[in-house]
Image (cartoon, rainbow, N blue to C red):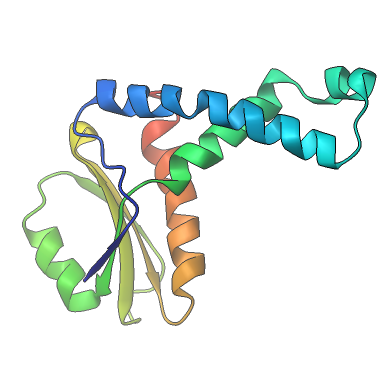
Length: 137
């Protein structure tokens, strides 16, 4: 089993701190992207809304979530010892699984995949954010 990412908050407060911490980076990223796109001040004020910066923050937060990637057997062994709720997407007939655990929420999200590991990890992070973190942050 492999682990990608480092963010696995033990408490809701830790999740909030991590989310807050990426706020300035999100603002900077959006500002620099707008500059690279040639936005003048007026267009920047018009198009770069709070929702745009919040979306960047959401993506930066989700990109750091810890994801475990392993075989179906490794996932099943982990699942047997986890007492929380798990939302699993994909087919049970493929050999690989990626999953994220949010201990404070007693929840996990899992996605099965056959070949496209990076795509599965990226999709899983977005799903974990939407399923577990979005309403809490």
